[in-house]
Image (cartoon, rainbow, N blue to C red; front, side):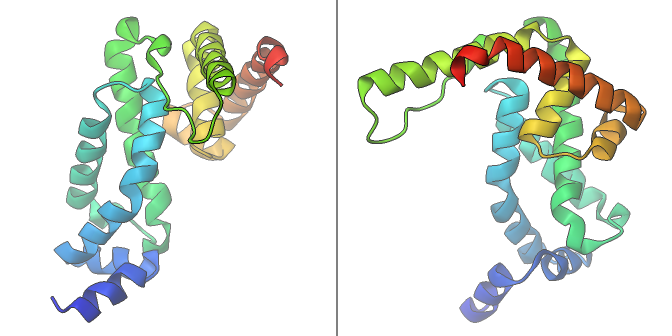
Length: 187
């Protein structure tokens, strides 16, 4: 592939790139992988609390996407389609390892140019958030993570978890109320 074509493909919008990938274009699929791996990894790390399974889940998600491209109705919505795939795989992994999941394993690097006191405060805030999330019932935690970290709509959460949208709204409202009270000192 010429460098000019590769650059044009990298700059193309999702509709064009996904359309080409749907037609079997491996180079277009590679563009999608490069474009969405960072976001999918970040989302999966939050869902699994920085588990060592993150890269495996993202890779499995792309394999599934490649195999199931025929199910993508609108190529311009490839981002949300990929996020639904990775979310389902992360939720499946959570369900399979639920008793072993430890939110305390979150280890975020400190931002550059931070003073030691800012680093300590940031880590304490992350630890408090992890502890608060750990206290939530599983369904509330899943709804909260999908909405607040994944950016899912209520309908997408309902579809993802196989529950009515009204139930997703209720679970999320309860989770938010709890998190607001629990994280009050960190505002």
